[in-house]
Image (cartoon, rainbow, N blue to C red; front, side):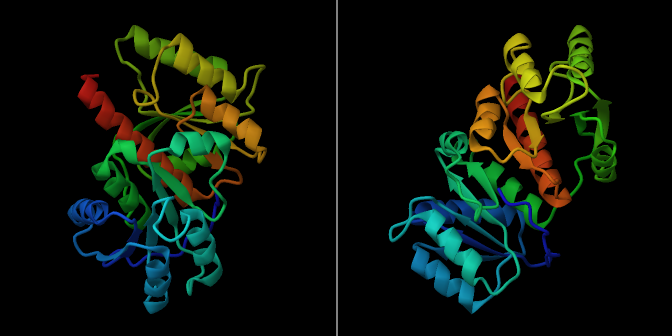
Length: 276
C-alpha cells in the first residue's frame, strides 16, 4: 500500500465519502461514523459514477469503498480518484469481506491507502476511519517493538504509547515468556516488528513462534510487520505466517501510528470479549 505524506486535515468538520452499492450498508456506516465524528459531513454514493461527480463537487478528507460496485470495480474507481482528485492526496480505504484473501494474493492495488475487514464490524470501521481523520493517543497501550533502530521507538512514545524495545527475536520471545509466567496473557497489546533483525532469527520466525508456540491468535495479540521488501510473494508469506498487517518502509509516521492504534484497539476489544 502507499505510504504518502498526509496533508493536515480539518478535523473539526471532516467530509467523508462512502461508496457502496447497498443503501443499508451506507446508512449503517453513516450511523456509527456520526457517533465517532458528530460534526462530519457524510457523502454516500451508490455507484462509481456518483462518487466521481461528488468528488468534483468538493474536496473530501477520506473515501471508503466496496470492491464490487454496481457499475465498476472498486479498484478502477480508486485509480480514477488518484488520477482526477482535485486534492494532492486523500486516503482511500477498501472495505471488504475478503480482505485476507486479497492481501495474501496481493491483489489490492497501490491506489488504495488501506483496507478494512468487514467482519470486524461497523463500530470498528468507525474507529478505524477516525484514526485517519482525527487521530488521538492510546494512553497506556503497550507495544513490543522488535527492531534495532531507536527512531521508531521515539515516534511511538511521542504518541503516548508504552514501548518495550527488543533488538532481536530471542529478546522478544523472552519478554512474552516472562509475561505468560506472570499470568499476563499475552502481555503487550500489540507487536511491531521488522523482518530482518539482530541475530539469526527473522520477523517471520517471530510470527511463527507467536502464532504456533505461544498459540496467540491474531485477535489476541496483533502483529504489525515493517518491511522494505516489495516482492508480493514474500509479503504474502508474512501474512500467511500470521501478520495482521504490513507497513512498507520507508516508514510514514501517520500511516504507521494509525495502523498500530487500530490493531491495538481491536485487540483490546476482542480480548475483552474473551475475558483476557
